[in-house]
Image (tube, rainbow over all chains, first blue to last red; front, side):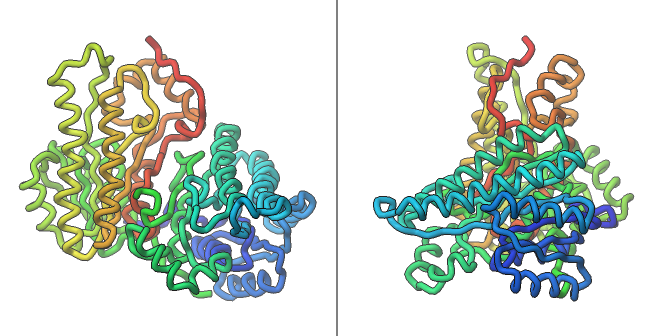
Amino acid sequence: MAATDDLFRLDGKTAVVTGASSGLGVVFAEALASAGASVVVSARRLDRLEQLAAEIEAGGGEALAVPCDVASEEEVDALAAKAVDRFGRVDVLVANAGVSDPRPAEQEPLDVWQRIVAVNLTGVFLCNRRFGAVMLEQESGSIVNVASVLGVVGAGQIPQASYTASKGGVVNMTRELAAQWARRGVRVNAIGPAWFESEMTEEMFASDQALRWIRRKTPMGRPGRGEELAGPVVFLASDASSYVTGQTLLVDGGWTVV
Amino acid sequence: MTALPDPFRLGGRTVAVIGAGSGIGEGAAEACARQGAAVACFDVNLLAARATADRIVEAGGTAHAAELDILDAEAMTSALEALADLRGVVATPGVNVRKRLLDYQPDEFDRVVTLNLRGAMCVLQVAGGLLSANGGGSIVLLSSIRSQVVEPGQGVYAATKAGIVQLARTAAAEFGPAGVRVNALAPGVVDTPLTKPIQQNPDWNRAYAGKTALGRWGRPDEIGNAAAFLISDASSYMTGAVLFVDGGWTAIDGRFDPPS
């Protein structure tokens, strides 16, 4: 059967990825480009973005690097303006930028809490609001928010009240925005990864004890590989998921079933 | 950057779809075929299974059809064992008797629980054993939004669909080490032969469409694409998950008033 009308492809579409300077953001940008989308890659560190954009263009894709701190309303507005200016529209947003700073709650300073929530929850809201507006104007678009299994279960052993609260917020904000925008052509979903190697989890993946903990607790017996998040993101971004909205896809090797 | 291999493609693999003769099973069979799989179309209704397989072949895909009762473990074992390169199994058969709990008869309860829950169990045992021995694979069971939200008159059906979720989650935990993934698809209201009578009632049709966020019924191909995704390597780290393909039905709060 011909795959020319492959609904899992993103040919001719424009995607914006935040937090694209490292780890999973790079994987998302490359996967979206590979699926045919033009990609706007965004993060705070411009040098890394430019390298990624050059790599995508060298592979025959189209990419634009725009520095942006998602916690800043002005910078998110500027990012959207640049994306629309270059490509005329935005079909997909992958709101991936996130930070963590684990420490016991009884010792978690207010400024740490506020910084984590500002990026992980407020930043995701700012991006959803701004790019959602672009998509509502087009009457078409798909948003994928990067939440976490820690948006639906606690961590405990890697204590981080601010992170889990922010990701839980993203899970339910995803439902709410889906409900608000569904009949105006915009779908909003999230993915909930468990343990993947990235800049954020570098320390954890360097520890044999932590890796043993992950292997023991995960039914699939191993942590995830970055590229294993690409499929769920592209699925949710594409028309293959045209009847899916408000959902958080858990990509966790079974972490939450046991 | 070199082009990445497309993880959604199913070329060189066989996918068995039990219930492929109509509705969501038919949608899943066609979606897997579009991604390049050889599809074994099973149904208790052989003619219906053949019609699905014929349509796939006419469109340039690979498929064959055979009769299979989802409750017949022995027949299912031989049917699946005979398939080369079996990597995925999708099972859709289910039945609903819409009646309030006080009116339910024991034989009706048994019929719904047997087909829905024992059928799912049979698939897990046969396909789980076979794929574990073959080095891995992916199983997709059909749950429903009724695993999470109910409606008067759907209690027993809802109980079986919630039961399927917990069977799938347990199977994910038990088969995970053998490389077998198990996930559940939870459709909302979908335009199938099974739901035709409800759709043809304008009040029900509107009430159901209106309860979804998207404001419409789903199509079998939309559920089928989600099944193909869960069968493919694009979901290689997903197991024990419940994927709601419900137009946002479960994302929104609000009491639902079905027409009386």
